[in-house]
Amino acid sequence: MNEPQVWTFIGVFAAVLFGGFGLMTFSLRTGLQGVRDRIGGLEKTMDAKLDGLRARFDAKFEAVDAKFDTMDTRFQAMDTKFDTVNTRLDHLERDVTTIGTKVAGLERDLATISEKVVGLPA
Image 1 (cartoon, rainbow, N blue to C red):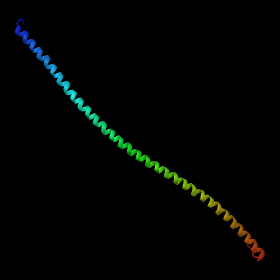
Image 2 (image 1 turned 90 degrees about the vertical axis):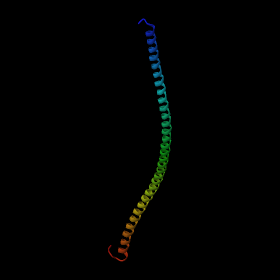
Image 3 (image 1 turned 180 degrees about the horizontal axis):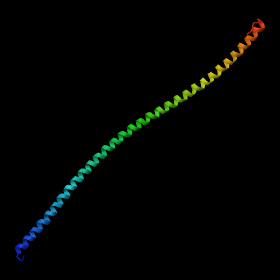
């Protein structure tokens, strides 16, 4: 191991070995950076597409909410109309009951009058 050629060979071999490791490390780092850049680009693309989808869904949900609000307003109007009809029917029922009572009283009065005037029993 005293010969200069052996030490030179060992030095050259070590230099080539370390140079190869350095080149492989650089190549691997550059390749990984490229992969990272592509993944970053894909991430931005996916974010843009998802933002577009979010905007579309938000618009659709707002349209559906507006339609439900319109339907709620219509149902409230129908409830008001039904309440009005129910009130009128209650008054009509009261009036018909009053008329029935008066007609029954008239029939009784008519029977009493016919007994007194004609002498016919009711």
